[in-house]
Length: 235
Image (cartoon, rainbow, N blue to C red; front, side, top):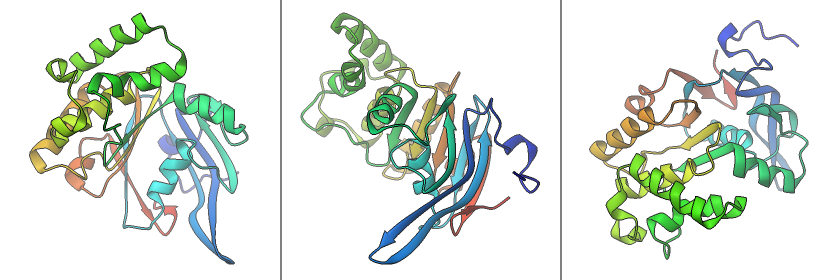
């Protein structure tokens, strides 16, 4: 399996936090195949913060969903957090996502009827963590993101930047190894977006980040930026 065109630091290895080998994703639109991701091989070392940029429709969000086990590759293999996820069952994938991956989305994806504290608690509830432990962890996370005084506020009472901080805290709830960020500042003004990126930078210790963004200023917070075009990484 040749990776000659891939820089050595990005070649998939057993120790990579995220490793893709010849990953392709094909969707069918009627009888027409759409090649969203084409033969991508890539390794992201543990603890790195990598941004993925490219024009709309280039496949970067699809790639993020594959890494996050939200979708399955048509061909190829993936290793994330030391786990080979390509052939896991649906139940195994659900457990994997809960324990290994943290997600931060552009539009926050918070439950509107729940408070900030309750939203953060959701992943821990699914994991079966005892109530007392959940409450202690929620308090710690609220403090980490600077929202101790917003614990009882529902999303409608929070600014966009505050909602995203709640989403970040929720992504850290089960102490995942990998954080996937899909346009995390895309719905925020410049000042709020910068505050969110500063927060993510402070919280990254021991985590591997893979972020999709259209904003070069946002990408500048990462260690390196990769570019996608027509379903492929441009090396």
